Image (cartoon, rainbow, N blue to C red; front, side, top):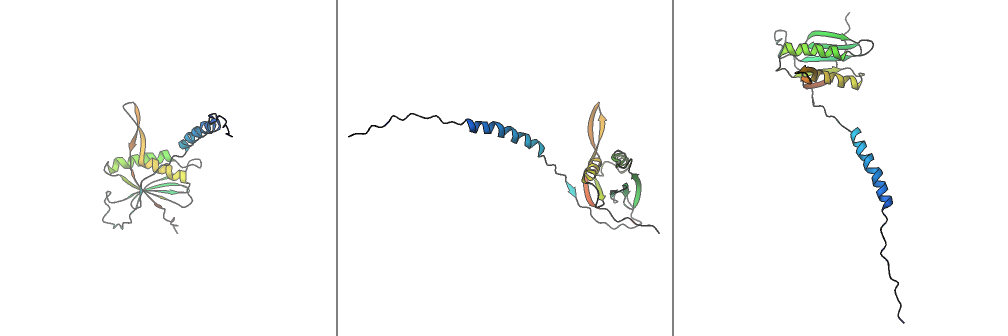
Length: 166
């Protein structure tokens, strides 16, 4: 007795659910990529240099911006250039940029380094805003707005303790 096999029909592969998953998953992954951007800032650690009173050459002095709770202090070595207080409880980044532009004109285009010192409790966004203000500023050249370079070599450090005068 021979057994007859039933004729097997070719079955179609149902990938509808997989296609639905891909239609949802691909756009979600593409959209999430936009929000996961990482910016890398190139920074250097400040070098400690001892200065003697007779060796006050502006090329050898470090340009410093000290960020404190009450505002900014711009120094060229031991010389205080300008103190910038907060306006309405906010840091005055625009005034800091103007002071740094003036310092760039005085020090020349060869000078590219700046040291930014901050107290421990300063907000991260303030530090980034100061770094951006120190690196460049917006200028109008030939009817176009461009970013002009100020001090691209930024060093970070901790601000010295406030000296109390007797």
